[in-house]
Image (cartoon, rainbow, N blue to C red; front, side, top):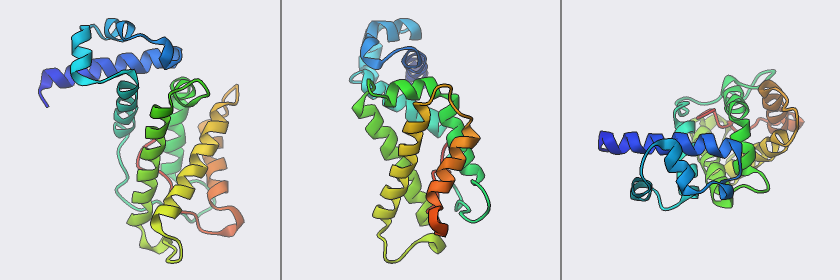
Length: 192
């Protein structure tokens, strides 16, 4: 990508992330985004179709900056693995943003992309470690169940005010994934 285009995209992504942490996306006009970014309106439309696409891409860039999974996530032990702690810490660090984006007045498109990214990461985690794969459970089903459980906990956790610590949320995720003494599927160690 052209360095100028990459710079413009980064400015727009930073602007929408800051604004979306303050108020619902449907209350953020493109004029506010471009003003915060210091770019013109035509630059916005050269890179993004609308605010939802921009916010979804900005969240993906934010998540990618935290690094993807490169090794199996350890699912044995007494507590949540570091990858799950990083995952919860990411949501805690950006809690205001995720509360707006995923909350009841958030964007269904953005929420769907966030959930799809988590599903992709969980699927990658399971595929990296053949020892945790249950041959009777299709990979897509195992990944969907795990990702769904994680996002259910994240949604409920983000709704609590004041927000409990990320380590508490990671413990809730861990306990849910390992309930009943069954080995859990690897969590989204790919990105915090």
